[in-house]
Image 1: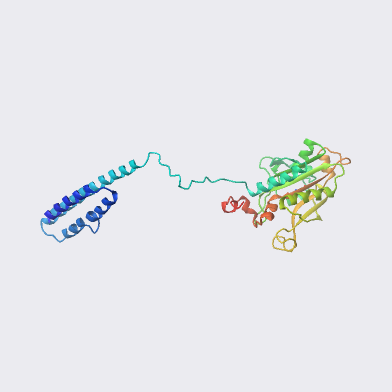
Image 2: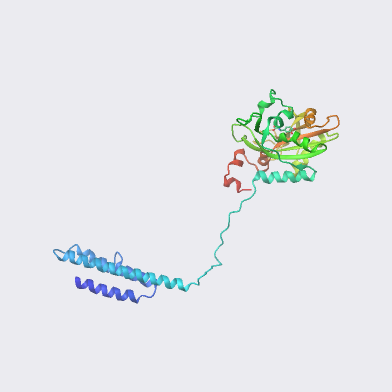
Length: 340
Ligand code: DAH
């Protein structure tokens, strides 16, 4: 058996050294060292031996196994080097597909806000952004909503702790008096921006959302001006004529005030889930600027008049794209965002 082992070793060594490729080497390795290989066959017989022969032969067989494994490893290393040398140093396979960098894109709220801005800029409106951290004065009082007024209850407000009189604006109307003070009259401006309310969230309510406010001050401004501006805006977004309906509505800073409904674009006025089967979607608050607000802005209500409106941009975007949950906008969920 000792002789068998030595013969096997010499034969294996000779064949290993003759191999020229990795494939040759692999085959020989299986032949001699594999589980069903020749050396394993001998090793399996060792357990049947008795007496002194058992440890002696066992040790020899293991030693031969180690030697053979070493030579295989050396040859493998050598072949590997040769294969590397065959490749040019800077090997570039131009047929491989490239790696695409992940590109970001605009949020649907931003896309629609920019379209709205474009429509109003064409009608001669300035685009102004105001502060999100606001005083009670500009958010409420200057808009004819004194501290004791029940209209404050409708807008659940985040007040700033330790800063009495300061809050997160609940509406973009905070810009009305600020802008009159700064620019005087006549005046045309829109105020897109983020507003905050202390709301319990659900599919229709968010604590943070976006509004577009519009303000036009001039002489003899009427509701016809307001309706025209709104229709031009809606046509700019929906690319078709959209019907609007005015209902009386109460907002302390306009007189008269309206709730403006838009004909439901999902069902074309037939009645569906979005419009609660009425054919109309409530989307805009509007009216003619209250004399007290003009006065707060330093304008004489006997000379100047104006219209104002405020619209929820989220709701407009939901109507445009058929989105059924307002919370998706702030979710950061790429499965949602990548659809735009
Ligand atoms: N600021 C109101 C709100 O957030 C919306 C609004 C209503 C704005 C009437 C206006 C307006 O300018 O005239 O509920």
